[in-house]
Image 1: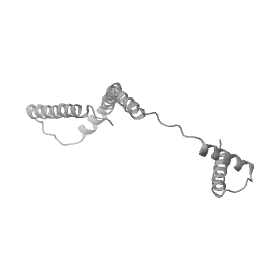
Image 2: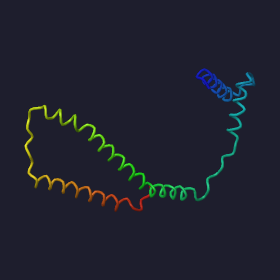
Image 3: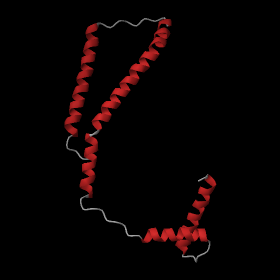
Image 4: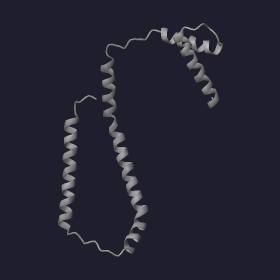
Length: 140
């Protein structure tokens, strides 16, 4: 459907809605067709929800949450691969650019660097453990 046909159909639908609101007599056949559809939709009985609808939806959401482990692992792998690929691609240019600059970065002793890495790793492990402990049994 091209844009002109779509606009024409939208105008017909709007005219049918206005004619229905005003209870106007039948007129244009295209507008009357839309009026017939609107009346049929308005008069159609809405099916009721099953009694256990909420419980079924909660179970489906829990099942989706539990199956998300594969997606999370795959996303972690893909993002890591992207970071490694970007580093391999950009590293030669970055090294050449940085070596052309005339400044010196002081070398850090090994011990503070290891302590910083250990502190970051510990914070990550604690955070993951806290999140896992506090997210169990909670419905969305």
